[in-house]
Image (cartoon, rainbow over all chains, first blue to last red; front, side):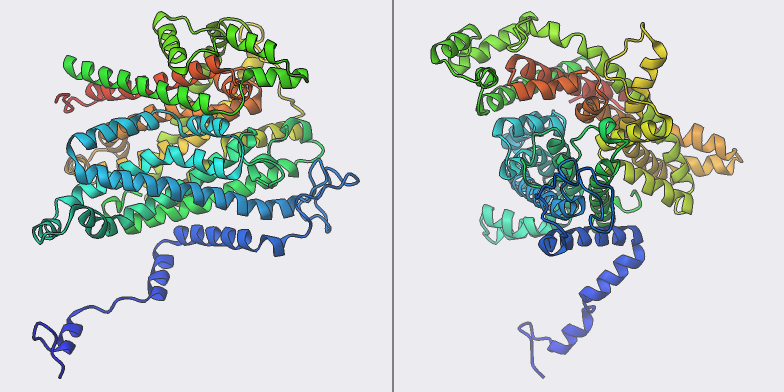
Length: 302
Length: 317
């Protein structure tokens, strides 16, 4: 029999520990307990696949215009019809998934990571630094997300990169708040005291011992913000301050006058909006379910 | 209480000063200014004329002087001149304010009327089909862009009723019925979205309160369900809901930016977008400051309201 470093036979140690459930089991349990969340996950996954496979799923070139077939009704050739320039709406929506996801995920990750680091350091250092950081974050949070993003993207100029930056900045204070709150409670735990007593340096304590324990709130935060980031992108593009032409963006596809096209081509207004709503709906459902699962404090509150 | 209010006001003013610096800096980072836009529409650039206009608008001065000038104007109540319209900024903004406030108030009313009762029903019938349906409906409200919902409403009205949204704003004194319809539709679109959040908070807050001992006592006394829920439970559950309504009111303005555009209402929010596109700095910076002040004041107001609604809340330190 092999002995472990502490002198206990290895198989004894193993028998005591419960078997870690595999990925498949965890996923199966999630689907059974949170059917709505699973549906949200499925919608998000479909969007991801559509975004990645867009060039193969398209039936037409999404930016090719066709002056002979404008405002066309949906038919076998153009599944969702054509817009006022004769561009195929189905192909544009499929490519729009990529733009929407790129901006949504990009700005959410950027804002959450920056905000998370600020929240972590602010809570860990504490005292005056924490107080001043909180006041600075108040400044960023005092404006509606959309208004700040609007001013930001106008001042940076329209491009995919700038839209990502413009949407990520308003996310920073929200992310910092969430991570700060969770670090404040972790900081007081005994294993942190133990790590400090063993002589672990501050930065290492913060990033190695505290950070991994904020992963739950962080994932919840990201899924919750993803939906609103997609919405803000659509709104900015709708107003002409977001994704520039010729990128097919769902929001930009809607920037036609509803009253003007309502009679001739209602599909112009309907389909891109359904795409936005479905994408946001999916990530909201998933976010809600993940919050219930990963954040036990909120369990039951839904 | 008094020192608490003073402290909160102090922090609010510091936050506003910080915001003014952020807004001012952001707008100066923007590529191109009003003069470029004026000349690009005219189709030619005359360097000496350009300098003359810049000088007339005070844009040739160092940024920090322009900033201090703006602060002085805010303190004296003079909001400067609109670059584009060549009239005092306040004169351009003033007629827009009532439109936006009316729309915001109507939307909040729609949101509360829709959100609170559905939240209560959803909590009382927890985990039934009705609860699931209401929750999915409310989440759908959070997922739809309110401007798109507005477009779909217009679309429906046009194709089924032959109603075409008026292209110009109708004053309530001119034609009250037309005015009411003009405002009811955008208020519905924006209110539905906000109701989703109110419904979710009402539901979770009520669920928490329903587990408390005094509610069990009320049931045990044989009180009717209606009395227990609407009288005993909701009284305590409504507090977080009030906070959300306060926050929503402030954030509504964000949603109005596009809704006013879609419905062609001459409000503050639609004008903000146009002013940004025109790089009309005095208008943009004053409008954004106006929004910031509304947000901060409504947060403060909600906190104060807490003390009135819940005598247990004491302000201090």
